[in-house]
Image 1: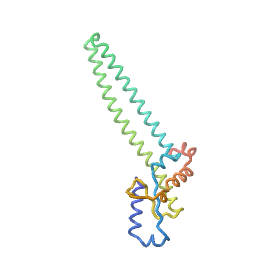
Image 2: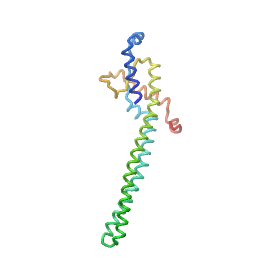
Image 3: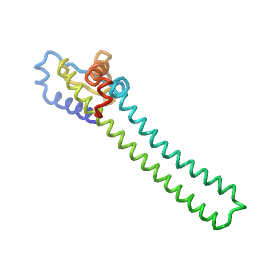
Length: 182
């Protein structure tokens, strides 16, 4: 995640250049939780909905193939003693092909969902970094960490998650987010 890398780089710079921090009155540190930002912003909710729709689209395709397979299995079972050997052989071959196609479809759906998730995460990360940079500069933070990084302790006073959520929703309101595709 690019926000994590930026946080680690900022910490390294602050530790290596103590004069830069000394020029300020105090070291102001903030922590935010990206999960809260994702869950509580209109943009995060829009992107989550987009993922859910894709997941359901893929699931519907898989379910249709599974239904075809179950129907064919039922026909084979019902015709076990009445179908000719040639007909049963054709149906079993068709069943094997459909099972192979189902496996392939599941793998493709998983790959496509992974790609969609990465795309959604990248969209959110770009916007989140913009917001974090703005919060950092306008509110004079020296460092801002994501709480999911190696922060061992963070006092509630340094948690700026709600500030990030509020600014994110201000910059990317639900109505504007729905149509821009970013």
